[in-house]
Amino acid sequence: MNKKPIELLLNLKRVNYFAGKMLTPEDFRTEQQYFKDRMKLHNRFLHGYGIVSGLGVSISAKSPEAIVVSPGYAIDPQGNDVILSMDMQGSFPSAGTAAYLVLCWAEREVDLMPISYSGGEGEQLVASRIEEYTLLKYETDKRKADQTGVVLARLKKIRGKWKIDKQFRTHRVRT
Image (cartoon, rainbow, N blue to C red; front, side):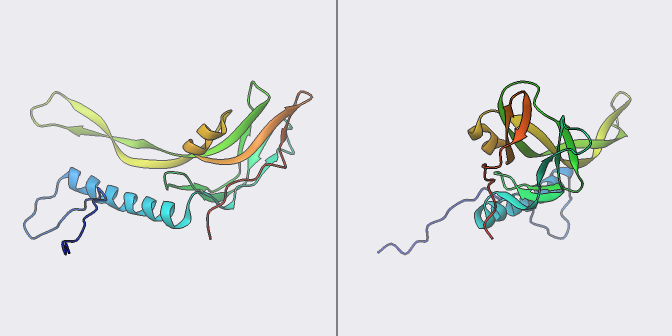
């Protein structure tokens, strides 16, 4: 009988701190990535993906040519927390007769600040922060929609007007 344990690498690395270790920007990025990846694994395997709460979809009372998504929280297929903190309004698709409304997680570099390199030429602007944000998009293919975010609604164009398909069931997380 082989008593050697079987190892499974999760591809997760964290920084090993010790007295005298010189920390670099890469060490801090590694540390942040480790905790982001652990949280995403937790979300995907324990809860799955889908709507956690809120995120109702309706046609705007002020403008029948606009759709409104109410505040809420979801977990996308990659395990990202997708948070909508206020009503979000958008226009209906410009073409087609059917579409899926998809809530997506995204991030971008913000708050540029100058840095100067010794021996370099001049200053360079770099982002001092990374901002997470939410966006809405339309997909016509359900499989693609499920891969890129959380599907909030199916829309159909009936007699020239967009309607929310009340028969469509959204994916919800396991509770």
